[in-house]
Amino acid sequence: MKSDLVGVVTGAGSGLGRAAAELLLERGAHVAGWDISGGGLGWLSGRERTLTAVVDVTNPAQVAAAAEEVRGAWGRVDFLVNSAGIFVLGSLADVEAADVRRLFDINVTGTTLVTQALLPDLIEVRGAVVNLSSTVALKASVSNAHYAASKAAVAQLTRCWALELAPHGVRVNAIAPGPTNTPLFATAGMDSAATETFLAQRASTIPLGRTGEPAEVAKWITRFIDDEWVTGHVLPVDGGTSIS
Ligand SMILES: NC(=O)c1ccc[n+]([C@@H]2O[C@H](COP(=O)([O-])OP(=O)(O)OC[C@H]3O[C@@H](n4cnc5c(N)ncnc54)[C@H](O)[C@@H]3O)[C@@H](O)[C@H]2O)c1
Image (tube, rainbow, N blue to C red; front, top):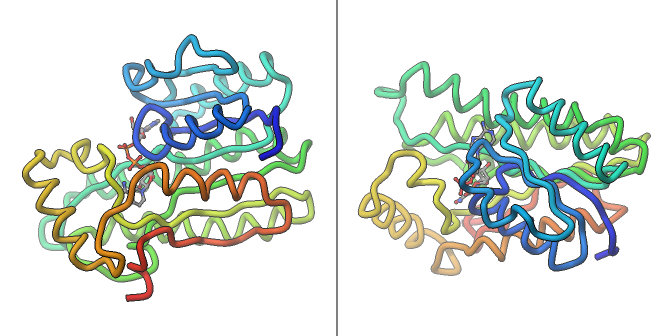
């Protein structure tokens, strides 16, 4: 990866955002980690070439203030990784309206607000955006339809923004991970036994026979940041789930 890149990773306090931020730092980037959970950002604070901000991605004022902090500190933004997101398990029969709204608010509106706030910076340097979609956006599954729909929205935003921003040289791509071992499911309220059963059940349907690790997703995120002639892709990183 080019050295000295500067960028923002949302959801950097946990899971895939954290793994991406770790790898980007390892490769010499300056990383601003944003997360709604201040505690989650503890691993990042005080490290060289980092900024941290407690940001709710659905709150435009917080997003604008954090963007301004990055500009003030480093003067540019080369990449944005939109990893902040939530998962909700629920069938059509029992899903609650509040959960549907929360899913779309964080996964879709949040992704939009952060990208919009950093757009002038990204245009200025012909930067890169990497969104987090999901394999369930590409393939139907039961018990998480609204989560899947929010991730399908992220996939389509990725393609549309890629077209919209291509004249500015800004690339927009997404990763569609399969089930990956992160706290996403625990945060959704599943206890460890339920998470284990859920992931084991999912693993049994994955052609390569296992769930993924965050580092396996992070390396494709950095690849999309680095590559200057790929845009509009939604790349499954899923052990073959999407082709099965
Ligand atoms: N883990 C998987 O199996 C998997 C699969 C496909 C897609 N994804 C997607 O990858 C992304 C990262 O998920 P993860 O597995 O790392 O989950 P995670 O729960 O480990 O991390 C998500 C992070 O987002 C933060 N966050 C949640 N709401 C926020 C908000 N309003 N503002 C700012 N930060 C907020 C959380 O505090 C957390 O630190 C999500 O968008 C998720 O949908 C995950």
